[in-house]
Every structure is written in structure tokens, then in C-alpha cells.
Length: 217
Ligand code: BG6
Ligand code: MG
Image 1 (cartoon, rainbow, N blue to C red):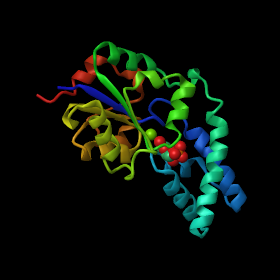
Image 2 (cartoon, rainbow, N blue to C red):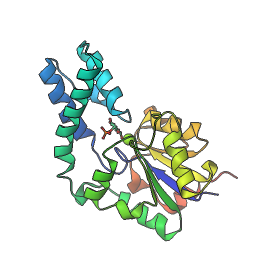
Image 3 (spheres, helix red, strand yellow):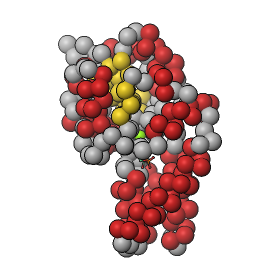
């Protein structure tokens, strides 16, 4: 029986990829190379430091660990200037009404995000109160596809993994859900998220009945 829903944040509840892109592109420019929107796809669901590693690999740049930390901080400062300006109207279509429907049906709700900025974003979107548990990049040591972030979410909600449905837009996130023995709804294209139990374009296509159809017999 499904008792809880665990939501990824970036790409599921809000489109922050565009802000990550601007900040990474600016850093690449300073380092003297181009960073395209297609390159940006590779950073979805990936941690901040791993994102930097991918960026440097694209630019063919080698740096010391100290320099990498400095640049990751710099990118984050820049990224934060964008998210600090976010408003509730940036919540993706259908997300808030689905969260409210789940609440009304007594389905527990948690966040499972790789971002260390998740609290700031939820506050800006005025969504913090809808989550009973928030597991973000400050609370996990293993990145997706490791299931840690979702397993911690299930534990915090006091439910079993088999009773959870994860909503994810990144392939690594879908893999994390499956590795955690959870049901998973992919948000985006079936060609990328084909391993999920169901794929939809966005939360506007979800409702309680569709959720319950994911219950195993
Ligand atoms: C994920 C995003 O949710 O969080 C990634 O999809 C991002 O693109 C990662 O790199 C880490 O985010 P932050 O906010 O801690 O830099
Ligand atoms: Mg995501």
C-alpha cells in the first residue's frame, strides 16, 4: 500500500536548471571556454562538485582541489543571487495542487534532493510547510543513484521503502528510487526515464488515482 511520496526538487517542483546553467556558463566563460545548454543536461541531478568536474572535463581544464572548492563556491554565490529572487509563481504547473491533494488523502510527503540550497528554494516558493521531512544535500553523504536520500526520507516519515513513490526528473534519481526498492514516477521523457514505473510530462498530469494505480497487487 502506498503511504508516502518522495519528491526531487530541481526539475520536478521547480525549474532551477536554467539558473544553474547561467551560473556554470559564466564560470566556464571565465575559464575561457563555452558551455552549451546541451552540456547542461549532463548536470541534472548531479552534485555540485561532480557538476564542476564535468564542466572542467568539457573545457579540458585541470585544477587543484583548492581551486575547485573556490570555483564551486563562486558558482554557488552566483546561483544564489537567482534563487533568492524566486517567487511562488515559479512552482511548476500542478505541483502545489498535487501536494495538497496528497495531504488531503493522508499520504505523507518528503523532499529528497541533492541540493544544499533546497531549504532556501522551498522557503522562496512558500512550500516548506507541505513537507513532513526534508532530506537535502546537507543531510546525505552518497549521491544519487545511491538510494540514501530516499531511504532517509522513508525513515523520517516512518514508512517502508515499498510504501513509497518517488518523483524524479533525472536518470540517476530514478535509479536511486529503484535501488531503494521504491516505486518511481519519471518526470520528463520516457526515452531517458524508461526504467521508471510510469513517466509523465509533469506533476500536472498526476492525481491521487493515478498514484494508487502504482500499488503492487
Ligand atoms: C540537483 C540539481 O537537484 O542539485 C543539480 O539537479 C545540482 O543540477 C545539485 O548540481 C546540487 O545543487 P546545489 O544547489 O547544492 O549546488
Ligand atoms: Mg532533479
